[in-house]
Length: 115
Image: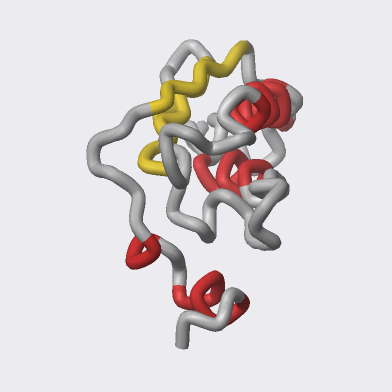
């Protein structure tokens, strides 16, 4: 029987990191003033999983004066680094584009009464 490169029984550590796994973990982080996770709020602009198992998360905050500005990036970094297979994580805060409520998911808008 010919050998294949498919490895359905490969150990988890050998499997590539999935963006869905990173997003699922990010969805456990909540803005302390808003009862919606930061992913559904639209604060996450990008997740870049690099070949060396490092992850870069690009995000924003609801405003430059956000009281959670010091806490949220640290929490995102910590939770992403806790994912099996992640070597390290970097969180970059950006202000362009400026966040606005239209960036929220429909579920977040519904939960916050925007509909």
